[in-house]
Image (cartoon, rainbow, N blue to C red; front, side):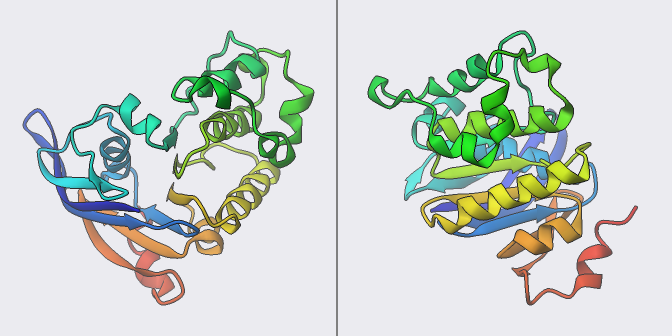
Length: 231
């Protein structure tokens, strides 16, 4: 469903990605791992249209979307849960969720039941401002907002960063549930190996802007992956 084919990406004269390839399929989780600063977020920006690669191409459902703007990719079913959550702190929880309506035709502008079954706390806090929620609750809100878009590709950029362990487990259960539905491809950017290993079908490890290790999660040697995660 998603094919990233040998992309380079630059910020001015600085090269952030070098020949990076990635694939994601419905009903499976592709996990991108690596230390801070190795290009994981740059890869995500390229996938969702926040940055345009300088070489290579990105295919989505057979269509070349390499140069499509992010709002056009959202209309095609690509949703991002960004690093740092990026919710609207002065809007209520309900208003934050409703911002996910933007790429949808009017008849589909409802909040899916799955949002509240996966994250019951959001149903209890609909009138509360997003900025008043804890970090973990804000992360659940950011995932819920993405699910409102009815995505076919869900991209999560370090959803466990700075989150308390109990909510990390809730997020893990939610991601596993979404995979089980079978109609959504998931790309998960993570640094925590144990969390990734429980969820990933395929792991892609990056270092210095390149893919240095890739394979089925069960086939990769744990120590080989961990070597690229430790500072």
